[in-house]
Length: 415
Ligand SMILES: Nc1nc2c(ncn2[C@@H]2O[C@H](COP(=O)(O)OP(=O)(O)OP(=O)(O)O)[C@@H](O)[C@H]2O)c(=O)[nH]1
Ligand SMILES: [Mg+2]
Image 1 (cartoon, rainbow, N blue to C red):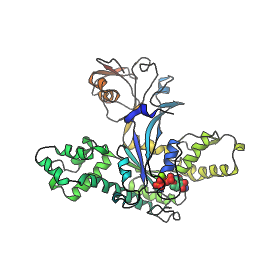
Image 2: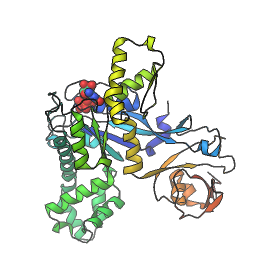
Image 3: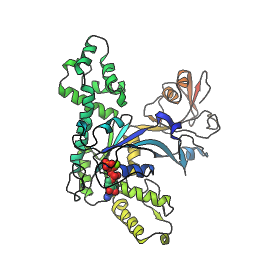
Image 4: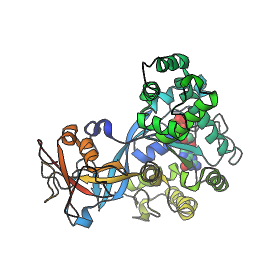
């Protein structure tokens, strides 16, 4: 559907992490519609699966009364689909950071993610090692804790390697604290601004590295992960009745805003049925419509009825689309903006109307957007045009949700 290479490295990226056998690959398949290996046993996924899913937002085309022609995204019936790279990782068991199960390779694979979806078996039907057990007999809260500890232990391992050597090079003035920590963590897409915020939040900015206690290092890693790799809990298998009470408890402990009940299996079934033209359904919908009942087998009808009764009627949706939207808009606090080259007809150089939508952090300025489009455009920025309000914006003007922006630059003309 979309040329991944063209989007390049700037595409938002989300990693699916969690205990083994909880439904990560099912969720991946439901999000991307790619067929992958799904089985009811631990360690089915060995190599990560990579695919594209779409965040859904209301497109500005209708508000502006134009017919658009997107390039970096899709627009269907006034809804913009923004591509996001999804990585489905191998599952974890306790002790993974020391090499148990499939070991800690998974952690290397999540380096580039902006955020993590932590998939949990909310029905409690897999034990701590991911082996099937009767629903309601395993506590999913223990799994959330286990994964947090494994990730923490791994990052701690990376950071503490040669700690005293690191401390000495700072002490001798060879390198600044932020640069020292940043060089250690740069492979994890942890930026100097994340590090400086974590140091600030914990009052560690001026503490010498060789005076840091083990507790300081632990708190620093915890805060750093919260800032640089926010996560959301996908409380999966919401179709299983035993999930209800566990989802309530997960929300109580981790906050309702951080827990999204979902049924990856239901979403996958609905998307497949829609793809085959058996039902009308769009991801995120609270219901579906059977197109022609005579085309469905009794088993298919029964499965659809179960999805309606156990998932849609109880939770309002399968939760799968909500996961992506919540991560980008609530956790990462991004907003969509639409850069155009020509402010009059809203086109790019090739005449495409509203060609691109960018997800940018709330607070992004006009000039920062120019840099995101192209370094040269940022460097030669003169001013921007807010196309909807028909006003000029200076370099420090903060962009708003759904702004349509045209950059006027010295050398390269408008983008
Ligand atoms: N009831 C129910 N079962 C599900 C759901 N999602 C996944 N499953 C089942 O859970 C089992 C494991 O699914 P996978 O997607 O392979 O799990 P995984 O987390 O990728 O497992 P590993 O790759 O082995 O770590 C399969 O039998 C799925 O059918 C769901 O929403 N509801
Ligand atoms: Mg898997």
